[in-house]
Length: 459
Ligand code: ATP
Image 1 (cartoon, protein in one colour):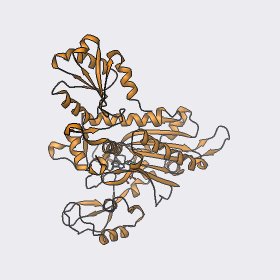
Image 2: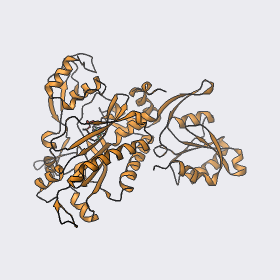
Image 3: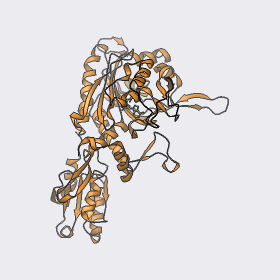
Image 4: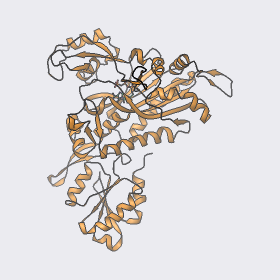
């Protein structure tokens, strides 16, 4: 299938039908920009997190993981600048009262070719007028002026009604890594350069015209902060650009569907910043960001907490606040890209067709499907399920023709189907069918675990 045939609607429908992702609070009519992961989605998401953690923590002896609290002292958000300026340019359609981000309207209208980050609010208003961008919901053109809205969700904490403190659901995981800089450095005796990584939920009061899980109000981030000497910042910035790129290639992404995009407008504290964009069905859009954030974050926390965030170099006796190279990728957004890249509709010989998800086997929700050719082979098949499921996520299916069962596994991306037939009872061999090539091999059961293991590695 050519990639241009994949629409977001088609993907949403496939995900709902087979059990990857459902609309949040579905039976109550949903809640805008929330989605629930189903039985397949939760496996896919966990495998994405495992692949990232393996690559950026497990295989990096100088990176340490944390799992910080979602609710943090409000001073954190004053220090980080979020209380004062974590806002988006919003405008409302006066006709149907739907609210949009002006920058998103421009990005989507131009299919990612125009970068609104460099525009002032007045320039964005002018662009929307000039290009006559209409309300995506009602199709009319009657906009309010742009206003800035803070995107942090607030809640309150306290045991009495009078003594409530305003606190926030974190809008990014990064601050959990910064406030633990000293804890991690001291407890691990890490020497600069070293990294702190975290996977966790973040919350933003986003207003979007849909686009599935691309932009949601609750999402997971996978973030890696690399603390280094200021003079090494450029070197590590380029190193992390390459690492972030290579990670995506190793997950099976086609290089032609990815591109680097340097930020045209840098935050006042940043020395360099870029995104990796993916060619989603909605056009080229940010998948992850890499920033040289200088010593800004640790210095701000030093200023606001009054605790020195300095590192004492044991060799040179030099004391300094390290620079930070941040690599941040949304787990849900990566999952969306993985779904888009994997989805395919293939015409087969004999006029048949199939929907197939070509996931990297490490990411596939189930590694193996166990299919007894006939129901009376079920005992042997269940025995095999019990053996293999100690090693991998497996699924079992005994209903329908074998062809139909293969198709069911193809559309959820199971890389291997194992068929048990009457010969299996005689000689303990099974047929293993490959999802992508549809080729079959006959194997002794006692070789299955190592056969599958070899094919589901992520290296
Ligand atoms: P965007 O420009 O798309 O709003 P951002 O530049 O604000 O993203 P960061 O704050 O750098 O994003 O967050 C890092 C990553 O987290 C992004 O690259 C993206 O993958 C993911 N992300 C950010 N906001 C959302 C969201 N609302 N829903 C899903 N993922 C998100």
